[in-house]
Image (cartoon, rainbow, N blue to C red; front, side, top):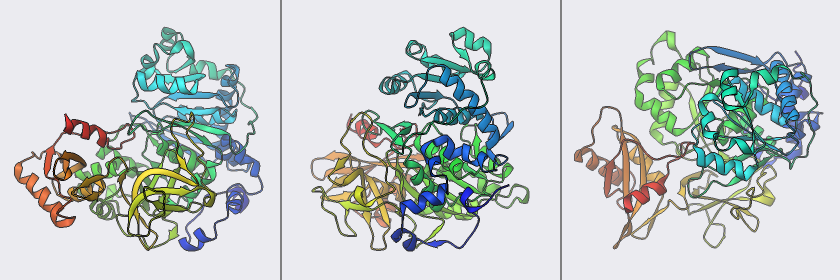
Length: 564
């Protein structure tokens, strides 16, 4: 097996590089060489970057995917097997008339077919468009109309969602011939089986899109995000230096690839580094999650604060903590989506036996601010980390002036000083994302003198009460410290005197009933731990919080609920 430095990008354990040294001496051209060696053209096709080059360079036998279905059956695919399978699907798509730049979508669970199809789409220079399996008709139609989707590949479980949309696109069904015939669709297995096993990758340029994403629509309609091939370098930076992905890792990103974090960093990222990615087709369940980690000896985990909180509240991990036959193998963990609070960080350290790093990003930008496992820096618990190398971040006031450390404002990327930053605007110009040289994230943060950033909330979510600006995240994290609380959300309620007061919506742990006493304890906790002006004057116990399909709390729905 060829493992020369120019032919492999995954790394083995080593002393962490100084963050400040790497950040201050960042060189985008040196990074390209670090990733692709002498074959820089590999960055001009996502399939070549994530699969083809590994086979060409003698690493075809390396496992690319370990997949476990809902019945516990395990499928393993090497890079060579993915290469052969994706060639057949690529030839099928080509026979449908799909060309470079065309959009092809799937609505499939985390399966080997999904991974194969994604690589096939990239291979012919087409653009992959994910459709989340929980989407309904309106969400699907909106995305397909915007993208002019040429082909959709789905399964029997999701096929009825396309009943009125099939006329405008070619439909391919993963499943039985009988099911495909009942819909008048092509049968995936039958069509793929007759295709040639070789096809040339289409070489593009670094500005060419390979993914067609849509924002999660926390507020308003989802906006289109076309991800160019230039993003591969930024994905590599995150996987290599923040997640610290290593050649021998058993890496499991729990995020659904129907959304950015799963597609960028459960599929593209690990395959780019030539490292095995693990798919668990089962829906989230704390016991299944722990059992999966044990069975597959997961060493590197990526997930969300919601999942970590659910693991914690289940009690499953505490019960098995001292069981020698169910020992975890985790070396490190990573969290993205919302802020981790101190209690969860400490729980991960105790019951997952590893450090968890909080990391921040957006569909538009990928990850831009991270605690870095593989770069040495001090980073206080509760912060969202330091700027990802290749990115210059600032905090702006309402007049687009840079604020000093310690003051809250909008996080922005300085485009001209961020060589790894790739976002250039929404696909159909749905919104202006830039002011002068700044990309505006819409997130309110505070920078500390050590270079760390602290999340306060979306600009729309910031609560102004009695003249004070309060970030809902601070309130929510403090409420989560109460032993009875599983999840919380904070919103502002209009008030004639204070402008707004703060209301907490609280989901309690299983078996606990909300009482006035618990509500008072929560209020007292926030008064004591946060501040007297930031405590929730109203606490409402609810069974669940409204969230986007990607797991972000939809505070605007809670504000609407409180106003009604």
